Length: 404
Length: 77
Image (cartoon, rainbow over all chains, first blue to last red; front, side, top):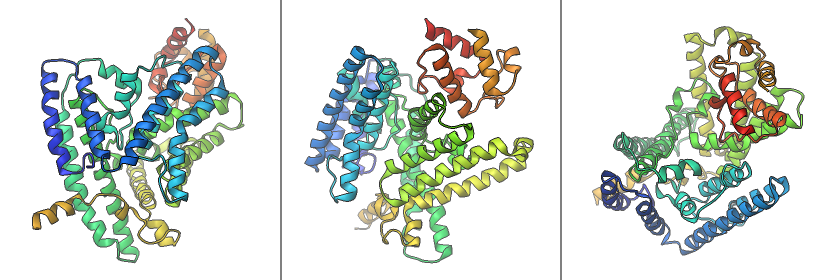
């Protein structure tokens, strides 16, 4: 069973929500109930693949030990950068092994659905322990945070301290039903319909077909992923956790910097807070670059390339990262150097043109991301593009069921 | 301490107005961008021997000179 995908999931979810609503109305804490539901759903999602389930359990326990030992080490030795690097490496090891084995050996050692997102949560805790923001990791809070089922598969990526605070306050709910509702429409109506265009245009060749594919894929990915995120957030609200927003009208972005504040927000902000800003701070302290602008350009390149690699080791993901790194670096230089921008940045015309260019740059980026661009260039074999890889054929499945 | 912080801000923002108006929103006025923000955190850490985590101190938390001073004071205790 795939969470937020199979029709049965929604039936079970509806049943599981009844006690949550009752607890909510009575203003009783939901956290233990939510944890039990999470365990059941995670079990149901992995039960057909016993190996993945084994890895998942092993991962959660091993990383818990890593965190606890790291806390002890910090208390005893203080902020030592050698230990810091060691524990970061330990935290990252399962994901790296999983990605490398999958790419180079053809089977996924240590991997399971959601390992990437869980690794983000672990790494940010290791970093915040080093920053002396986290002083203890209680077992319940840890497992509940890691396995919280609405966001276990594909985010949004919450922060542990924010999450724990929510767990321990009685929830107030406002517009969560609307949230879950638009999520459903986005994912199962908009995304599924656009997916039909992709299937239709995918085998065709030529500039026109590729252009249609590019724009259709961009919108498909947005509706699929933003829809998924909204459902996850809406569900999380019902279980008492105000999971942060992941999308905010990304196609309205004024420039690429603005785009990354609107698209997969929790991921890009994760990279901003835990990689980019820290890298910049380090470089400023050891005066690695004479010019701030060069430092920023390098920082953007590294930041986005790592983000590309995180998606996968395929060439199109790496290209996607480098592409966005370069765009951010160029935007930064333009923003700093251009006299034209200084004069006109508040003009309606300037903003309109900038928004239009950004939209097309973004669409081209997603086109790279889809794998289709490298396929056209002959860098990847046909059929490796995302249409066949992403399981967005829900609409088709439903239709075949109806027709038979 | 306050003077040191204000000098630093004037240097990063490249504008002495931050010394006169301590409630000015440096983010809104585009005096402090993402780079200036990381530079500010790094310099404050070095200057006062404190730890400022980008995941706990957002750009808005250091948007006015007043806020910066209050932040450093709270960390020095």
